[in-house]
Length: 132
Ligand SMILES: [Zn+2]
Image (cartoon, rainbow, N blue to C red; front, top):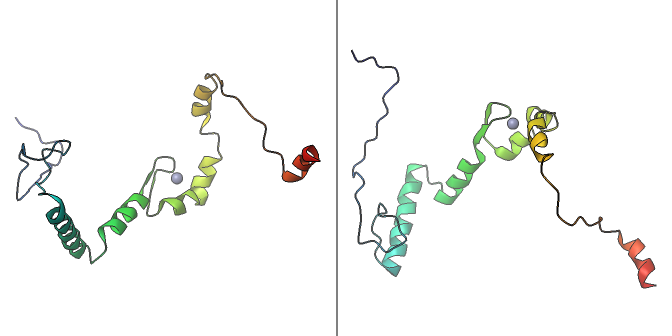
């Protein structure tokens, strides 16, 4: 008997990956072949434009930034739309100032501090004393 426990996951592509031996060396063999210099640049531009069209004309770089902002907070067990805004939220700030980091501090306390620790730079007024 064949019991299905999880929903199947599919991937449908117009072109399945193929190993490209002719591409220049550090490039991935699964990269699409990009012929040299000028042609390459126009190709990249074209691709950005077409991708942009799919997402309502948003430039691809902006789109990536948006993606970076979004995420999931493992402390608050909460999804957020914007990282900075989430870090300023009450829930997250409460966590950040809580004793939930004791597990980290316990490990840190086992490490040896062997850097040179300078005193904080004195404000300018005090330094003038030396030069006088
Ligand atoms: Zn959080």
